[in-house]
Length: 503
Image (tube, rainbow, N blue to C red; front, side, top):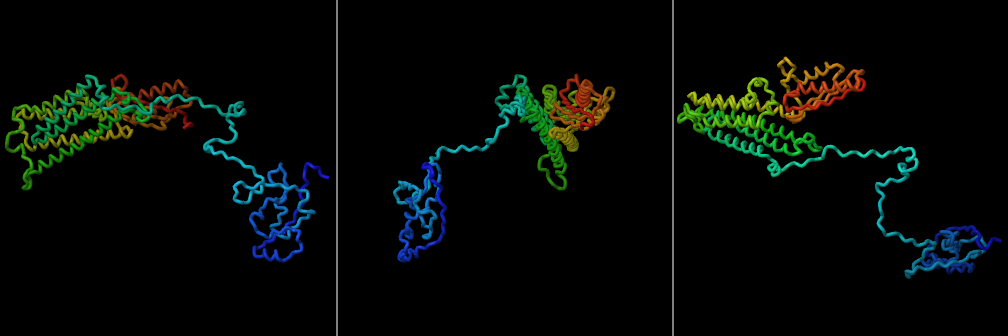
């Protein structure tokens, strides 16, 4: 006999399924079956088919019934029979409470328990690492496989530096800088007076173009001095690696374009004056050289041209307005002249102004042919100087270097180029081959040279250090103004040395 604390396992049940249709219900009820002891399941009522009032095995330690809940509910087939002695043998009935909704619906026959789901918002685990964190485990602490990187120092270069406004620039100007700015205004008034005093003279019109170019260069010099009061001008940053000094190169490039278009403008005016009156056409403007009084009487002094000479000399000595541009162009055939005349722009302005002053003093009449010839020569000179200056500054804007310097080797008066410097570096003891050599000019005061050299294997650190010093001095002395000569052009040399097998 089984112990009273535990129910015996349920007997097997044989189920023979069959499908009944509602039309056969009345026929089965009226058939008068002899087996009146069996329960009639032919009434298809919703509350009878799934009625929980049937006997079932119940174990409170289980999540679901130990036997089919509808063991004695033969609603699937009226011929269903059990192999056990009776339907209610060794079972204890259990009453399942009806739902509290009161709508007469069928209750749940399973013993599921009600669970309350939290209504708090769900926190997503996106981006969180799952699994075992090996970095913080004891194995990692023992073997020190994952080490924390050392803290990086802050960048030496700032991301950006503030650019001064016009008001800040005006407040930062010194008395000397303001005097230079006032002189630039006076120089501009002289250029306007020269242009207005031309009275149809092509030579004076060409001279006014040159004076306007001098005014533009003087204004750039004053702006460079004023912006030099701020840190953003020379200090490098991530946004401006070379500061704002390259803006001066861009402004000089604009002046070179002005020279080129000024030369074209003078040529067009010259051709128009020459062709006027030819072929039966009447001139649109009166010719000052035919009839009437000349612009400057014979023996008189041309005050406009004299004022242009004075303004050019003051700007040349006081502001040095074309000093940096002349170094970029490197006109060697004017190097033997004095400091002011060695500058091609000062030379062109002073020579034209002096010619226009001397012609009336010598009582030489300025007719149409002479006036057109002077204008044509000035136009050609402006065009050539403008093209050469545009090429030099364009290469500088493109981070290239195509210039030459006059600081040749001692006892020789010749220009030294990049190819000559490369040959001298290859001739240095310890240098086997130059793998790469790059030279470029950043702005008027800075050039850079990057070289990759193959040296002999017997060179130690001391020999390599001496070789670096010799190559840096060689580049500075040959391509720059040289040390101790007062030049502002500085070369930054970067050398990468190694044996032939390393490259």
